[in-house]
Each structure stands twice: as C-alpha cells, then as structure tokens.
Length: 289
Image (tube, rainbow, N blue to C red; front, side, top):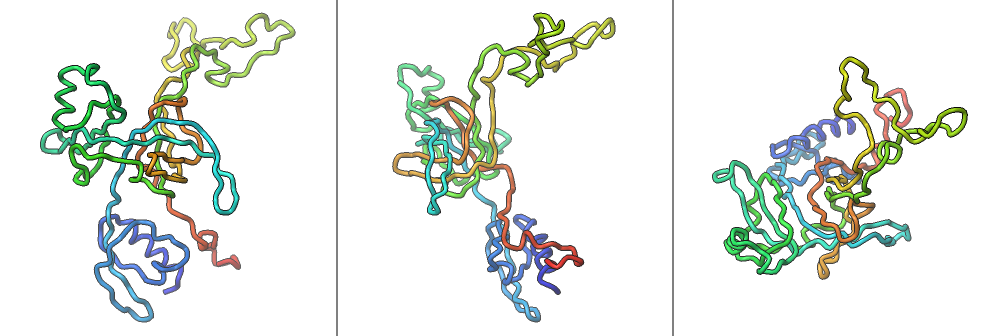
C-alpha cells in the first residue's frame, strides 16, 4: 500500500467522529498535521511494515461567551507581520440557567454579562438570578450545546476559555445607517445626468409589474432602512488572549459599533489545517505525483 493511498484511508477513518478506527503512525506523526480531530489511543498493533494505532474520536467542548467590542488596532507577530485585530472585552460571564432535555427538550446554557443595579430588575428576573446565586446581569444569551455537563449553575466564565489559534464565530448588531436609497443599500447603478435622464439619476426605476399582478412582488429591492440587523462573521482567528484583563484580540473586523455587545462561540466551519502534502497532485501523469 502506497503512502498516498494509506493517507486517503486515514482521512476516511478520521472523518468518523466518535467512532473507533485504525490509523498509521507515519500519518499521525508526520509534519503534514492533517490529523485535526482530537483522539484517544485505544490499541496499537503491528501489520507488516506499518504500526497501526486504534483511536477513538473525542468530541470538542463547545464554548460560548458574551463580550463588548472595544475597537480595532494592530499587533505584530514574531516575524514582524502586521495583523489587524479587533479587541473584545469578553466576560467575565456567569452561568444563569441550564436547560436540559428532561425539562426543556434540549440542552442549552444561559449566560449573563454586565452587572445591573438591583433596583432596575423586576421581581421575576430577580428571582431568576437569585436561583442561580449570581448578581443581576444586563445581557443574557442562550447557547445550545450538545453536552452541557461541563457547565455548572453560577459558574464564572472568563476569556481564558479561548486560546490563540482558535476559530470562532462572532455575532453582533451592525451599525444603523438610517433610511438609504437603492444605490447605497443595494449597490444599484445610477443613470447618466445628461441627455434626458431628468431628476431620476439615483432612483430605483420601474417596479416591473403591470395590470397583472397589479402589485409589487415581495422582496423587491427598494429604498429603506439600512443596517441595525443581526450579522454573524464566521471562522475568525483568535490572535491573542489577555486573561488578566479579559481581553481577546480577533483577526479582522466584526459587526457593530464600539461598545456594542457581541457573542463569541466555536466556529461551525470544519476547516482543516493544510500541510506540506496538500499541494501534491494525485494525477499519475504529473511529476509531482
């Protein structure tokens, strides 16, 4: 069996998350770093010239956090490369409620961020916070996880649950831009201002409908309110974590103004790290194969 065919069989085995399988040690410890999912070694055996390791996939703990956007800056890595980052004050957050399959039909954790005056909390919410033995929180957010056993009621979650190199999805409310025309809102093209276009150079044009159906279709791109809506940016990289000050630096931009509330969680993207062997062609007629 060639190294390439063995690698393809290995990738098939690693795709079975939570299931046992065999994988060669030459693949596990190669510099390609293609074995991304965490695993537990169950058994090791020799087969010809190969040493096979029986592994069992381990589910990655899902994490979520509420934070506040501080602003953007830039930092430099060890090679002197400039990295644009957004600084987020992430936490400390408190676990306010745990929802279980037996009581609620699904698994979830509700966490709170930002203290609130007791005098500003109504009696139902005061009892809700008292049950968890936490101070009243200004922002509450529910995160659905497959397994919430790692979280306890009243537990304090800080920024150190994430570390540099993690991939996260950041959700926030985009900046509101008020009432906008079709050019700014939908990137329409304008008409020329000469030769009879009249005072309609920036108008949306015809609505398209006539006597049938005698109405404007739903979803028609027209002028209206722009921004101030929920936006999620996926697969952003955590560059640096300051656990002492509860700050997280994330590469790139995130939605919302300075001081806006954002929500961080594990990315839903399953992106594997590319190794040196990723550029090798599988075409037998090519020299690189």
